[in-house]
Length: 260
Ligand SMILES: Nc1ncnc2c1ncn2[C@@H]1O[C@H](COP(=O)(O)OP(=O)(O)OP(=O)(O)O)[C@@H](O)[C@H]1O
Ligand SMILES: [Mg+2]
Image (cartoon, rainbow, N blue to C red; front, side, top):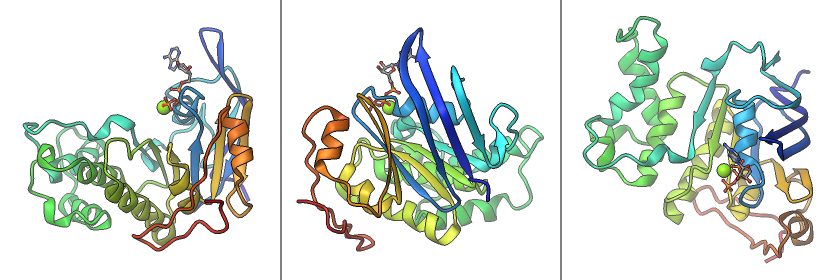
């Protein structure tokens, strides 16, 4: 069966400075892929190549069965960028308006709302547990709540793959854990495929089933069922990485057998 996303021998350089070199991996429907690695290792660059924001110098990307160069199913792809949750308190839009933006944009006729506009917004807000906040101004919510709204905004168009680039930056530990649980639930209950860049090695190894680690000397694809050692990670990061055991209080997932 064809993979939902396949990256083969991907290389990318900024003005001749190599960032990604011969990166290859694949994921299937319902996978939760974590992308980790030190600052500057190319995580965001990799995400941007998979979203066709950047064009690789070499290699192939296939997404939902099509070569990315000819891919026309972008409405099935959701993207939550790192800076998504930075609205100030006076931004004059409600949560429902923010979530509905994607529906209006995709309805084809500028400014026209689809018939099921309200229901789809309700649905998306329920999925992220923000149904009580629909009429609140987006800027008056906490960073973690705003992050949920931005996930609702991409869920409203029923994406098959959801890309998130460091969505937990600037939110507290509880909200971060809640976000991981929410993503794990979207994977398990809705069969959405998640690709997430993060620096939180402890939490991602609990929730993801696959990891791509970008490092100084290349990259490693790791199946979470095998133990991930501190030695392996430290070699990749180029400095000593401590792998603390992690227990998610939201969904009671444990990091099995990891060193503390
Ligand atoms: N537009 C650009 N032009 C030139 N170099 C860039 C550009 N964007 C990123 N780089 C460089 O490419 C390398 C990889 O950047 P990238 O943003 O992909 O790293 P990252 O792994 O996402 O880092 P972080 O963890 O800090 O977000 C870095 O050395 C960075 O300085
Ligand atoms: Mg980045």
